[in-house]
Amino acid sequence: MTLATNLWAMARAVGRAARTAAPAVAATALAVVAPTGALAQDPAASGAAPDYGAAGLWLCRPDLEDNRCKVDLDATVIAPSGRMTIERYRPAEDPKIDCFFVYPTVSMDPGWQSDFSPDKMEWDDVRLQFARFGQVCRQFAPLYRQFTLTALRAPSGAGPKPVGERPPPGVGGLADVVAAWKWYLAHENQGRGVVLIGHSQGGAMIARLIAQEIEGKPAQKQLVSALILGAPVMVPPGRDEGGTFKSIPLCRRDDQTGCIVSYSTFRDRLPPPADSRFGRARDGMRVACTNPASLSGGTGVAHSYFLTKGFLNGSGGDAQPDWTYPARPISTPFVKTPGLISTTCVSSGDFDYLSLHVNADPKDPRTDELGGQIIRATGVDPSWGLHLIDVDQAMGDLLRIVAAQAAAYSAKAG
Image 1 (cartoon, rainbow, N blue to C red):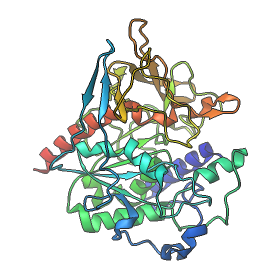
Image 2 (cartoon, helix red, strand yellow):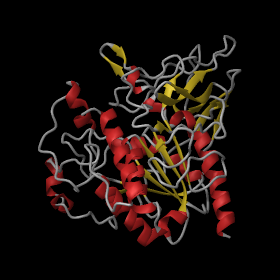
Image 3 (cartoon, rainbow, N blue to C red):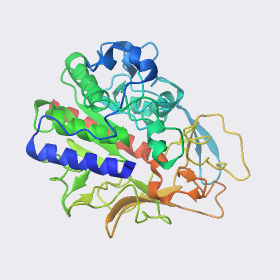
């Protein structure tokens, strides 16, 4: 089963659960993964829910000594003129809302399912996709036993078969995410508003969590928004609700609360091919696209935070070219490139997606090329689009939106 099939099956399962108010959502290969290797020694491997009171089961939590959200996030701002300045990261001193993050498929563990021992892959992803949200919220990022990159690559022959057996339903995956969410609500939330954030496998987990544990339940009143990125949220044609979720709409204003931001990014000159893994309409539904650079519609200039050097090691993506020509040294881990890219939602045939355009200027010394593609031995795999930079290319806009939503939510809450 391909990742595209898994994501679509997950979206359909979420939609069915939302429409019928079922207590659980059918498990899929992205969520049902097996305890193997070192994890077999973990008490949670027996099938019991892990105890998320344990500090070691979190990558980010306000009380952690080893908080993976407290990292160097300074950025070099490269203006169209080529002038470079340093933007120092400053976390919020007293954020009024919380953010709960589920990371994408990053584990290189050898089994079908990751263990509870994080490594560079999990740490790097939190740094890239979530740590910067400390500008606007308290941060919570649980570990969970996810479907691994090892398992994802095996069917294509890109790696060895995962060791061990697939797990029984209900072990790891969504069950871990739900356990972490319930612990957070019981011990940390205290009535605060919360933004749910996830990309790819993490986005699919967030969608299932909302359908199972939030929509139509008391926790829905605390939903500031959900950022479900690089994973499908389905809506009926021309509508903002009624597909994956019964009543939670798509966000169309920065200060709208209780809503969903969702999209998958493709380069404008490489739109989704017929075998695309993202953006395809099914069963009379369309895939949601909300443009973070312009939620109300049309084209917007994206406010991005890119990694200075390459992308996640081992992700199968291409390396980022030099940011300027001629190349100049950059001392910060991140780069901002004001005005370099624009994005717009496109609906074409069976596909809905976020189209990214590089605003090339021969007088601008900055690069006209971005990495972020999946590279195979035969070249670029267009079916993935710019999946690896779904979050990076819009990070500044997502922060702006969440800040506006936090202010609106706090004003309503009094």
